[in-house]
Image (cartoon, rainbow, N blue to C red; front, side, top):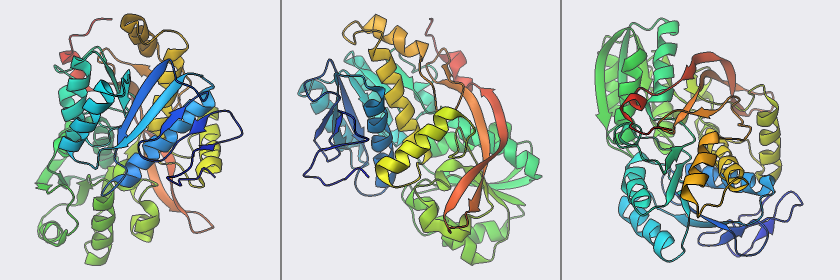
Amino acid sequence: MISKNAKRTVKALGAATALALSLGQVAVADGHAGKLKVGMLTTLTGGGAGLGVDIRDGFLLAIEQSGNAGIEVVVEDDQRKPDIAVQVADKMIQSEKVDILTGIVFSNLALAVAPSATAQGKFYISPNAGPAQLAGRGCHENYFNVAWQNDGPHEAAGATANKMGIKKAFIWAPNYPAGQDALTGFKRTFEGEVAQEVFTKLGQTDYAAEIAQMRASDADGIFFFAPGGMGISFLKQYADSGVDLPLVGPAFSFDQTILPAVGAAAEGVLNTAQWAPDLDNDASRAFVESFKEAYGRIPSIYAQQGFDTGLLIASAATKADVKDADAFRAALREADFTSTRGDFKFGNNQHPIQDFWVRKVIQLDDGTFINTAVEVALEDRQDVYATECALDW
């Protein structure tokens, strides 16, 4: 298991890569200064820390496994605060001289950092946040997203709600860019009626008022987006409320980072994502086993996204020098790596065209709760904002 001791740098899986996992330390693929320097800026403390830790761990594992000597990674904490994220990103660019920034979990932070990074000639490669503003008219030749455009998992949830027979949905999300995209995405594919639409405070943990609204509504189903600790709080309170309407949502509220804390309150609920731990392909199986061996836990979608992001960067680095921006950009666009989700390609706005899966929370014989893949919800899905992107390649 890879140690997280802040005072140590360790070597994983018997290879030569030194993975420095503490804040401010550096991971170097062959033990000396690299040809390509990556700034990993993510949430490692406070609310949402589990998501950033998984992105970081998946990313570093991919760099280690790629065998691509010369990739140097600087890891810093954004504390889930936009002003801190901007300060740290500027330090990485100006002082650390990074070539690529990656790692941000939350869309409001991505909107604060990514445009500034690309304006300074750096690449920003997102392993998670995919706000609409950066997928359409705000797209940029140096901005790539390896996860999804924010609407995608929620569009899949809308299609799933239709199959579940939900006709009138109570829908809610926290009031920030990803929450707004969530409800927009759900409504795009949901064929029924929205009984009530509610935005909550980002980071909210008490949902008594919203559950009372659900009870009083005439909805026959609930769609919600509540990542991290918000999802834990809501699911536990909902399970205790006596409200018995079926739930559907994206993976963020049912992911491996929170299922141990939610437990039986999530069992049987359908949710949507581009990946599940039991996805039936060789790359995914190998990733799950190596992640469990390295870190002692089942990987989440955040870890999977971090891993694929690392593989993408490593594959591009074998084809082009990052100092030749045009050549490196072309190598990124080629996406010549074997994704854990199966088929992977970029659309014209440099966001994925991919399948989204319906997953179901189940309990294994050992008591562990996990998501299992059920069926494809949306096939070869490209985000709607791509038509507004002027990139031509």
